[in-house]
Image (cartoon, rainbow, N blue to C red; front, side, top):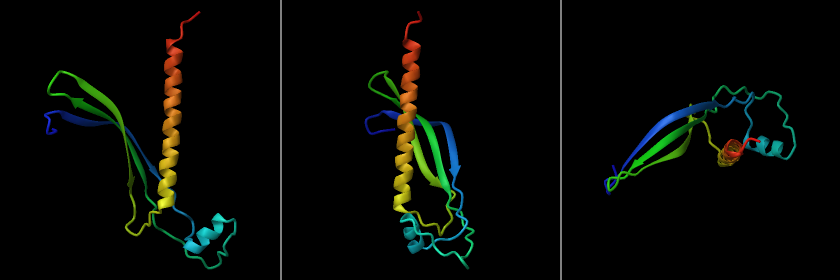
Length: 127
C-alpha cells in the first residue's frame, strides 16, 4: 500500500529461465581480448573450467494498481529480468550484461511489432 492509499499488486503470469552453456576452456582476460581481435590463443595445456556461468530468469507480470480515491484500476504489463544460478566465483562482465539488455530490448521491440501487426490484421474488414 502506498502513502496515498493506493494499492499495487504484482502477479507473475509467465516466465522462462535461460541457462548459459559453460565455456569448454578457461580464457584469461588477455586471451579473450585477443580472440575479440581475431587472434586464436595457443590452448596447449589449458585448464578445463567446471564452473557455471548461470543464466537469466525472465518473468512477465501483471501489475494492478487500485486507486483508493475512485474505482479506477490500472493493469500494466511488466517485465522482470534477473541473473540466476550463478556460481560464487563467477565474474559478471559489464559488456556481457549490456549485450543481454540490448538483445532483450531488440526482442521486446520485435514482439511489440508482431503483436501490433496481429491486432491490426484483426481490425481489417473482411471483403
